[in-house]
Length: 610
Ligand code: AGP
Image (cartoon, rainbow, N blue to C red; front, side, top):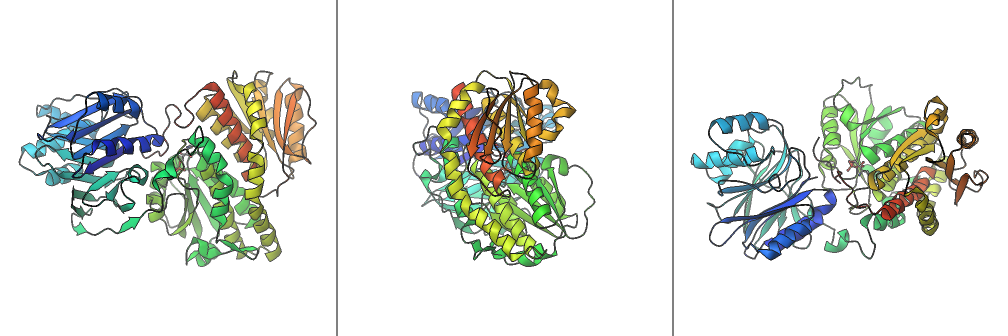
């Protein structure tokens, strides 16, 4: 999704802007640009379609210098990824803007401004904002007043960075619905969509709140809140270091992140379990009381996080006896709801900035839920700040668009939450101790499965020329099959569908032939014998199986059934472990196909627009 970086300093800012954009590449984008105010008070701009490197090349061929600048990576929404549509957008060489989000009333505004005689050079929604600001400047406003007046008229979501050639040394930032942080340097200030962009220049950040407008100069920061009053926001020091978001010897971030999972899961458990039980304080001081009072759970999330929610439904119902519903956020937010008393509203999100999930949370707040709980990987995200209870996953920065360690740490945090809730619902201490023991074993088991990578890499070759694939699972492994299918499709572009194996005979069996691999997750659980019958239905129709199982559950390996054996694992924690081989398989298929593994086409890491 679009990324913003901007700086006001004494030094030359172009290198800071370019490095910031490189660090935002993981968010997904299709063009990039920067504008700086030069020593002669002229706004100079470079824009390029494709990677930030293309922009860097333009800058090295014809350097533009200045100590005030804004930069952007664009993920196309309104208008194709062309140079004309790339940001920054400018009006009459007077004012330049970068924008993340969507202006919903852009057509009406464009109509007004066109009628007033202003020309437009792009198809974007953003350009209306810069032209409207220019219009206010022409009427005599200063830059801050112009941004205030224009943002008051905008509908939709935005994070903005604005500079003008008439006010050197001044950067205006505004935020509503899209994330924006201010980086505090020594005698210099920055803004960015994500702290990762600014870690080489500062670790001190102010997180802008909804409706804030920041008036930023090299040595001064003033923030106005949504009502226009001056407000102090706390400065927070990030614990991340500049190299936290680097590949560290791996070919791709995704590979690094798959390998980091045992440590990330161990860190997510750290300090939250003791003597065979979960410490409910891990979710905050009110957690024991609110979880104890909850009689139902509603989970809302998107994509991979939604799959984690689907696994958690099995756990909430079977371990805590709590009825649980799970829904994708983009659907939840747009339908009427009947909320039963004492229902806990639980959101899951790696980024904490996913527009649909945030909107669902905001919608839910007026619906009478008992409390809101967020399980999230980014401490200062909007989701965390707006929820009553929070359980942080401790995955560290996840850069690859395909979510891996965020998913397994979400599952870890979810199981901790389920156990904390189950205590007051009568879960026996001995059963809790068994499950805590199973959680403790996970880091070692994950390492053992990651150790199978060379063999999985070998299997990947069979997929390179395939166009379709089927993923099967039953019970809590069905969401894992869904997650495996999502991983394969998003990074290798092979069409992949997941089915609960018992559903095959109701339709998808018609697709099965020797050309469509059927990948199955089959740990030794209550449903494994039924699952094996479903696999025979596939073999009887000439289908080719790849089965991940343990020694006790493995079907006989044959010419049409390859089996990869995983360590034995407790039935409850098996979904975490069986995710790993599917991630590795998708990764190696994508590498063999030569796709852009970390930034797959058309996708963005943090989906901050609807
Ligand atoms: C999965 O690999 C994707 N990156 C995507 O489905 C992602 O999980 C979804 O966009 C939700 O993101 P979030 O967890 O940051 O809310």
